[in-house]
Each structure stands twice: as C-alpha cells, then as structure tokens.
Length: 308
Image 1 (cartoon, rainbow, N blue to C red):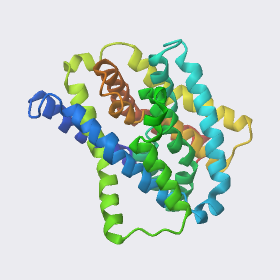
Image 2: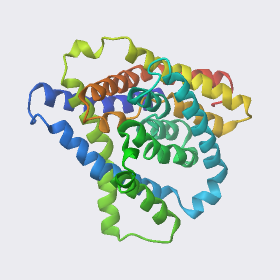
Image 3: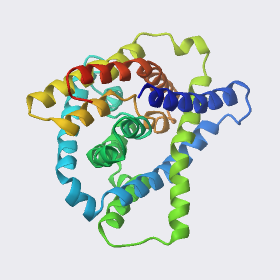
Image 4: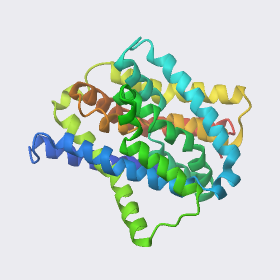
C-alpha cells in the first residue's frame, strides 16, 4: 500500500519538476502556461471527461453499481456541504469563497484514488469506486467549473463549453449502444492519457514563476492542506458512520475525501496569476503531505476494522 502511494507521488513530483525546471530555465515562452491551460480546457479535459463517462456510465454498470453510485451522490452532497462550511472562515463571500469551496470539495480521486484502491483492494473494488465517483466527476465539470471560472454569468457560453459538451456526449454514448471506430477510440484514449501529465507540468510552471521559498511561506495553504487531508476525511467518515454507511461505501467516502486537492484548480485559474499560484501551492503541499496522511488514515481504518 505504501509503495503504491509513494510511486504515485514520485511520478506526480517528476512531472511537476519538469514544469518547474522549464519555467526556471526560461525554456518556454512567457505565455506557455496560458497556452497549456487552453489545450487542457478546450481539448484534453473534454476528451478525458467524454472518454471516462462513455466507458463507465453504461446501462450494464448502472444496473450492477446503482447502489454504489447512489452512495456516491450522498457522499457528494455531504462533501459539498462540508466544503461550504469550511470556506466561510477564509472568505465569507465572492470569488475566493468559491475557490475555497472547490478546494475543500474536489479531490484528485482519479490520479491518486483509483491506483491506490486498485493496489490495495484489487480491480473489482476499483470498479465499484469508479461508479462511486461518477457524481463527483459530473459535479467537478459542472458546478466545479462554475466555482472556479464563474461561467454561469453567460449561460450560453457555459452550455456550449467544450467540457460540458464532452460530459453530455460521454453520458449519451455510454447509455446508448454506440460503438466508436477503433481508430477514433484509440485517439481519444491517448488524448485522455495526456490530461494529467500536462496538468502536472502546468502546476510546475505555475509554482516555478515565483521564488522557491515563497512556495513554503504563508500559513493559509498549510491550513487548507490540513483541513483537506485530515479534518474533512474524519468528519465525512463520522457522518457516514452516523447515517449507516458500511463496507466499500464507507471506505470510498473516507479515501476519496482524503486525497490531495484536484489539479483542475491550477488549470482553470490560469487567467488570474495570483489565484492560480495560490491554488498551485495548496495543490502541491496537499500532495506532499498526503504521503504521510494517507498511510495514517489507512492504518486507522484498519485498526477500526473498516479496511482490511
């Protein structure tokens, strides 16, 4: 289990380091971060969302995992409520409050969560977790998109956003018996695989734009990481126990909420350098500290008999 976590964080760190060095050595043009962000939001993220939903939101999976998906929806409602509550002391209103709500609600359940669950519990449990996370994935690219970008001010623009189109088509293709040509499916799969590495490089570019010491200064990012990695999983786990969640549903609720902050906070905020840097700091520190907090949470859950 620890090897699985260290491997994911090591890979994550290398991609961040690549972006960091590219920025520090001035190997890329000044607006490279904005260009990469546009590639992510206009191409890679829409494809990633489409491909993931088309593969998982199928009639067969809904029949097999409907209860798990329902628990995932309940978890999302709880996580969103907790995120709103924790955002209040940091920013009572306005754009920053929305950013904090996102930081406290959305985790990197895909890059960290799925490999971790598969490595510890096996492929079958991972299949259940994928369906458990479908409501959170849909939330991330609808409400989460609004929280970070405020695109609901222009409803037409929001509806026709490439990510929303990818999400809608992904659900349609998943539910209907539509088979994509093999060549097109391969292209989409390869593009989808590019999403996370490029987002990590973008994270490295963002934090590399400022002095290294500044990355570790300021208390807010540390507090956000502590709340994200320790306090929220504890609260979510307690609430799930209170309302009768057991087995995999309790396991998924705690581990999804215990993962580091999602990378989209860096991708979506590139137009505002200060917000992008703050989001990048929170994301980076949460990944760094998760090397210790995830094994700790796993150990505590094992002692409690929740995880085996």
